[in-house]
Length: 263
Length: 295
Ligand SMILES: Nc1ncnc2c1ncn2[C@@H]1O[C@H](COP(=O)(O)OP(=O)(O)OP(=O)(O)O)[C@@H](O)[C@H]1O
Ligand SMILES: [Mg+2]
Image (tube, rainbow over all chains, first blue to last red; front, side, top):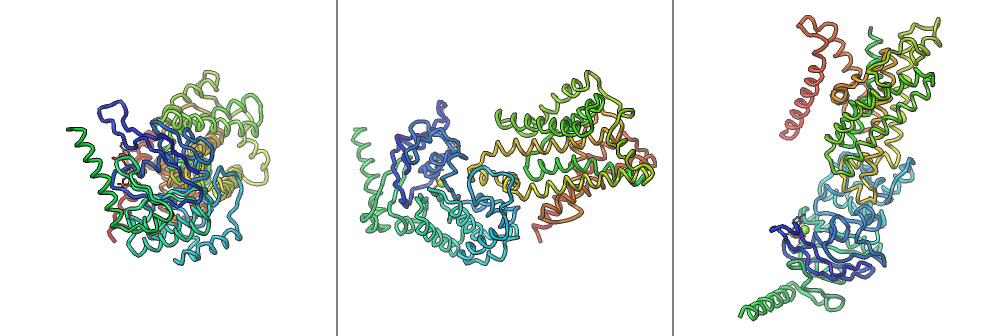
């Protein structure tokens, strides 16, 4: 589904500030995969998403989706099949517009013409869908989104993203800005929607337990590389302790190698 | 006299609707307006001078404005130039272009050619007075434009403009190019501005390439005055208050022009007043925001 071949990303290339943030990364995500991604701050997780979504272009390497090379496609073009949710709940919705306007905007992807699609039928459809969030939003269609709480906004963004029928969704710590209760509500909804619509998903999280509990594949990134990649049965047996042990193991080995080199 | 204020307010209200579109909906502060307003005026004037008819003149004036808007948006999109600079560039170039449109003249009187004002007066002669005929005509025209805009903002495309000004990432996420939307939006806005210029020239009885000087500030002042009148998040109310704001603005200018001498004001001070109106509006809006936050 998504194929990254030999991707690297260097910021400020050619200057003395040059910084390699992604290092020769190869990754192949299958259709219907639900991949969780963990890694320390600055590991390159968000950059990876930026490269997939077309928000940034790689310094080297190619990005393909399906069988198509999309390396040079603009972000808005790739957005037709990619749904992306950010950590900041403000980025998913237009706050000065009503709930129903927001839902209408994201209902269908692609260029819009001079047609009025928001009618009674659509409204009752939106209401029905909002019921799934269990937040009482179905009665607030005419209110501005700015009046919603962060958790409500993020849940709405999630629903809107799913309704727009993307093939892939990228979730970048989408519950990190929420309080624990709302975070767990939004996480439950996420899992439910992914299951219901069999979405191909990549989810960045700082919550190791979530990374283990959800999805069928786990990646750990560090220094712009994928250092741990666990799938299927092996992933089911993961625990936080095992994960930490694996990390220490790999990084210690590197360290020893370096010592060997220096010696 | 009072009808005059209303008629002027309505005519400039069309321009203010254009300014509202860019400044408020698109969040694209567009200064092209100072050039596209006189552009509408001179295109209309030349059409009337050449007996091309009021209707064709109106269409061409609107189209000229749309083109001017396209240029500004294209400069902004392609060269990654900030909104303000892109607008100033177009506005500056338009000054020369407008003189060219007038065949190297800076102004053109319209007193002796058939125009929309003489047309209305002719059609209603003996039924109602000229002043009322103008007033009714412009109320109808402005209501029609307002209604079309309201419908436009309810279409799927119209909604995207709201999102664009609010959260560009959201528009990108929908698979829509913000650049294309800006072209359409800034184009339409300047089309309205030029339309307003075309009517203004006929109302004033002349077209002048300097007609647009500072007009964007008067449009902005109208928009802000309107915002003090009514609070709402409904587009039909938002467009209504722009028009009311424009009429109120004209009333204030009228007071300044006719009673200002009491405090030693001259008509030359009116631009100063326009600017101060905007500054005071900004000040009050900021003060309200701060108060709203602390309470
Ligand atoms: N536009 C940019 N210009 C220069 N450096 C950048 C840019 N964007 C990201 N970086 C750098 O790239 C590195 C990786 O950043 P990235 O945002 O991908 O990390 P992350 O894994 O998402 O971290 P976090 O968990 O904190 O979100 C960081 O060192 C960051 O400072
Ligand atoms: Mg990040």
